[in-house]
Length: 242
Image (cartoon, rainbow, N blue to C red):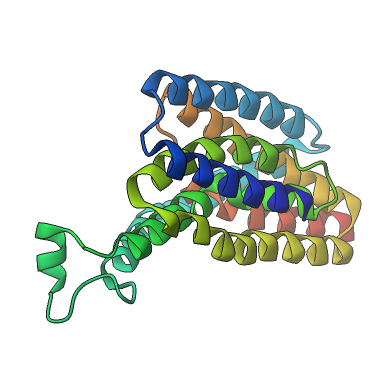
């Protein structure tokens, strides 16, 4: 849980700074930060992927997993969930104001809007899932530490725009991201070392895709490839049993 606690601290610190300065960071600083994290994600992804003991497990996980995720369209469903939450969060619109009115004229409740926007940004990305799994499986929380830097900068901008509601987004962040880490830790106890290694290797490929996105080289639908982690675990488990 160290990575998640650092992440929470970064969001709180960034939010406080945003509340004080009440202005966005220069775009060039945000961009160079994302580029640095993108390079870091590529390096970590490669180091994780090359530790596989069976490349066939990797390829037969990433391809079917990506196809399954694309058919389900996880990315689109998360976007729709975000839109739904933004429109229907309690207190998010005045009495008698319809969803169409909210879309057309905006909402007066910046607290709720800021909390929802921050939660979606901090929790609905592939970096959250992969980072939580990395830490839950007993590895150093490098990805969550990198995510903390990004979230800290993002919190400055969000708090400046929305106000103190961004600070309170750390509550669902702690529950969601911390819960994923605990689930990964519980799963690790039931899995053998080879299975964990293959899941981590596939996760490394997804990190490479994330790095490509952050560097704006090409848009890779990393969220739609998340089912590959399940395929990797099942295939590696079958091989170990065999």
